[in-house]
Image 1 (cartoon, rainbow, N blue to C red):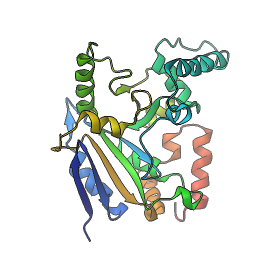
Image 2 (cartoon, rainbow, N blue to C red; image 1 turned 90 degrees about the vertical axis):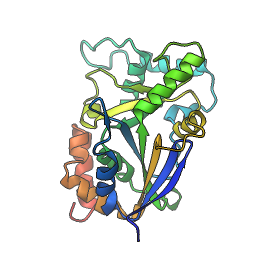
Image 3 (cartoon, rainbow, N blue to C red; image 1 turned 135 degrees about the vertical axis):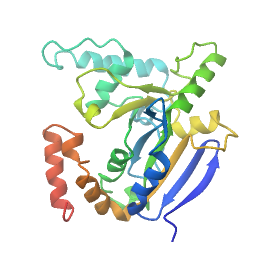
Length: 267
C-alpha cells in the first residue's frame, strides 16, 4: 500500500490521502521542510475533525447570507457586552479584526478562521475532538495547507481590478490577520493566525474561483488522515509536547490534558 496518494491539482486545489498517521511526519518533511519565502513558511495549516466540513467561519454558518449591517450589529453587541469584562486597564482595541479575534478566543461567532504555522498543531486540532455520534464521524480527519504568499498576491490583484489599493482585502480577497493584542496567550503558543474570507464565502470556493485553470501547484492542499489513528496521533503529538498543556496555557488546558490521560491508553 502506498504511504500516500495524490488526487491531482485542479484550480489550485488538491487532496492527499495518507494510508496511516505514521506517514504524516514523512509527508510534512518532504513537502514543507524547505518551503519558505523570505525565511517565512509559505503554508499555514488548519485541522478539522470531519473531512466533509467546509472552510467556512462560524459567523457565516450562523448568519448565512445576512447583510453587512447585521454582521456589524453582531460585533457592536459584543463590544458593548465586553465593557468592564476585560480586566483592569485593558489595552485599546481600534482594529475591527482585533475585536473579532478577541471574540473568537472567548467563543463568539466571527468571520475568522483559525490557522497555525505548524502542521503538527493543525493535526492536533484535527484529532483532539472525538466524534460523539456516527453522524459526526468520517473515515478521515483533514489537515488543510494554504499557501499564504500566493493567496495574498492574488487578493491584491483582485482588489486592484476592483479599484482598491493593494492590501485591501475585506469583501474581495482573503485577509490574513495576526492580532498584536496580549489578551490571547493561546494564539502565541499555537503559532496562531486567522483568515477572513469575503462574507458568505468559503476558502476552497474562493481559491477555485480565483485560481481557475492553475493546476501546477497547491494553493490549498487537503491532507486526509485515517480517523482510526486518532489515539496513535495524539500519543505521538504528546511526546512532541503538542498537547493541551502547551497549546492552552491555562486551567482549561490543564483539565483537558488530564481528561485525555483517562481516555487514551498510554497517553
